Every structure is written in C-alpha cells, then in structure tokens.
Length: 276
Length: 265
Image (cartoon, rainbow over all chains, first blue to last red; front, side, top):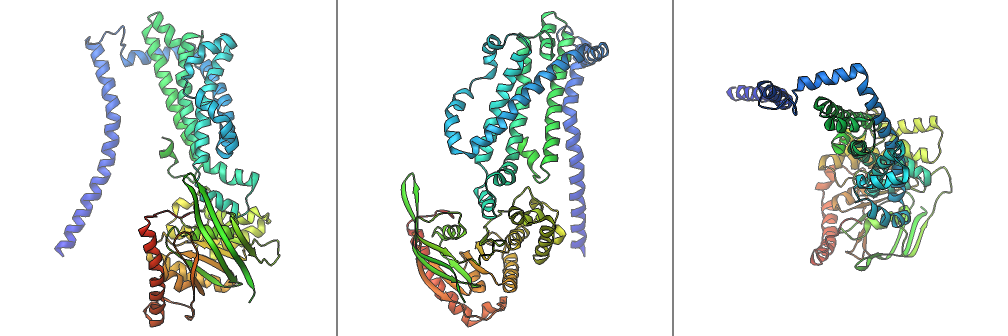
C-alpha cells in the first residue's frame, strides 16, 4: 500500500515537473532577447552607449513607424521584394527541374557535373561587377545575381535529394508497374520533395544576403540601399530600421516556407526538423 | 499441379570496383503453382538477389528464367513484399494499397472497392487515412502485404518481410499470411533467414550456400496445416529444425570465416 502511494506521488511529481519545465523553458527563451533589449535601452538612457551610434530600441521603433507613416519604407520594401521574388523564381524553378534531371540521369549528371562543380564554389556576390557589365545598372542585374545564387543552391540540394532516394522505393514503384512519367511523378518527385524544400529555404536565406549586398553598391532604392545611404548620411536610426526590416523578412520567409512545406507534405512528420 | 517458375543455370555476377563478384551460381529450381516455397540461407548468399531476378527487377547474367503466367492481362505476374518499409511515406494507407491498381489503370470505383477489401483482410480499415509514419512496424508490413495482394498477382514474392518485427508481431503476421494464402491460392516465394519461419510457412524449403549462392538442399515440409505455435513443441518440428540448422550452420560458418559480413544485396 505504501509503495503504491509512493509510486503515485512520484508519478505526480514527475508529470508536474514535466509541464512546469516546458513553460519555464519557453519563458527563458523569450527572456534572453528581451533582456538584451532592456539592457540596450537602459545603457543608452543612462549614457553608457552613445545614442548617435546605438539609438535605443524605442527610438528605432519610433523611426520605423515614422517611415511607415510617410510611406518611405514601403517604397524600399516593395522594390526589394520584387527583386527577390523575380530572382528567386527565375533561379529556383530551373534549379528544381535541372536538379531532378541531374539526380535521375547519370548522363545528364556526367555532362553537368564539371560545370556545376566549377561554378558552385564561386561566391555569387563576387559576380556582381561582371553582371553589372553585362546587364547594366538597371533592375535586371539585381534579379540576375539573385537568380544565379538561388539556382545553384536549389540545383545541388535537389540533385542530392534524388540521388539519396532509397532504392527500395524505386524498386517498389517499378514492381507495381510505374514507368517513365508515372515513376517520376508518383515516386521520384514526392520522395525528393523534402530535399527540394531544404534547397528553397537555403536559397531564400541567400536571397537576403545578395539583395542587401547588391543594393549597397548598385541601387538607388531598396532596403539594402536604405541601410547604406543611412550610414553614409549618418541617419543611424533609419539604418537600424532597415536592419529590423531585413531581419523580419528572414523570419517571415522561413516560417512561410515551413508552412508551405507542412501543407504540401503532411506525411513528413519530421520535415520541419529536417529543413530547419 | 503445373509448373509456375522454372530456373535453369541462373547466374548473377556483379561488377564492382574491386572486380567481379559471383552472387549466384548455377541455380536450378522449379516452383509449382500454388506452392509456398521458402528460400533460406546465410546473409549475403544472394537470396534477395534471386528474388529480385524473379521479380524482373534485376537481370540474370546467365541462365534461363521462365515464368508461366495465366495470360490474363489484368493480373500482374508477380508482386513483391520487400524487407523493411518499402511503402510510400507520402501516401496514406489506402493510397499505398491503391498504388499498383492505379498503375494498372483500373477504374476509380473498382480500385476503391478492391482497396477496401484488402484493408479489411489485413485489419487496417480504421487506419485507411493514416500516413505510414503514424503506424507501427507490423502495421506497415500489413500495408505492404495488402498493396501486393490487391493487384491479385499470380506469384507473391516476399523478401524477409517480417524480419524487422518483434517476435509476437511476426507470429501473428505469419499466421495471417498463411490464412490469406490458403484463401487466395497463390504461388509464394518467401525469402527468410529464419529456420523457424521457413518451417512454419513453407511447403518446401530450399537451402542456399554461402556466396556464390547455390542451392544446397531441398526439404519437403510435411507438417499438417494450419501450423499453430504449438507445433514447435512436437518432435517432428524439432527434428526438421535440427537437420536444417546443421545444414545451414556450415554455410553460416563459411561466411564468418571469410569475414564476409556483406549486407543484403
């Protein structure tokens, strides 16, 4: 009797701790960024940090809302988003198609591999001057450099994804009569979908990196331009506002793609972990 | 009884970077229609390769493989139940069972009926809309079995289908398989590394040598069906198990001596 009671008590304690801990961990993971912001704010207010270079978070938010009101921010945001969207689609779609072909066909792989291996390691930002020579300073050059970077990232992850498909799934498909297009669309494509999503997620991250770099040097509008020009003219508040926007974009892209992945692949319980 | 499968002088040679590997050598084997044949052998003996040759997934290097089909075009000659989990993770249970029918171009309504029938047969009808990741290992192999049976193949090829399952689940599934086999009267070729499983299931057991795989000996299993778990305590069962073990252990030792711990090819 006593032992049963003890066990009961023990169980209750265990589960109690379990749920408390969950909440506790969630609390401390909100706590750390909050603490940094508070320390930052206080340091500026008491004069430890120079407010000319490190404006307080509340000041930055004030600047940001001001820019939203005047519509200044929207102009920069719209043009950057347009460049990212066009570049991403122009790079990712051919990347997926060629990646699937490269993964599936040994011949195409043998043909493409030397080119891809030679071009992939080049940091794509370094191609920007060359692309400016070819396409001029207009919109095209920004879109092209993003597209190139996305293309290689998606191409390589997709091709690897196809090559890593468990052969037993392909054999099962063949044994049950899937050939040609059926084998591709009913087995190979769904089996490589998680890898394709990993590639897309990485590519979106690269998009942000490249758009900022490209707009630093070769634009007169856009979030990257906003950050750069604010630094040049020492309107530091706006520079921070630009940084906040870029960070928010990264967050939105990642979670949006995660949602899309969940909707397209309800069968992959661990897809979120795999693409994270 | 008519012959269903005839193999004569079948060989399989793999070309690898290290040179040629003889996987199968001089396989001569006949399987009768409606027979339940078990193939047993040490790991790496080429029994899975042999099964894939029967399935038409691999091409033999030499020799002749003759499959006598009934010539009914709506029925496939064979369907494979693979070892491990070869069901498609992106399809629900019922869509997995549906797969072979879909590939054969069967009408939607008929497909749905057939799928339901076989989901009932393997006891998974309540799980029709689940995805494989939500199932236990035993349930996954039930799906694989239903997927194979739904196409109504003339020959059912099974590659250690229950090898990864726990002992209780394996026994339950073995009994289910035999029950379904008796209902459907199919020719079954069943690859296993378990003596116990071969005796419980087979009409006949073919024992293979270590690589290169040859047929070493053949045993008729004249134990009455249905073979329940109690059978394992009878002298007949134990005698057969003993003889098989002595025959098999020589080959297992050969594999160990050669250090050829090669996986299932």
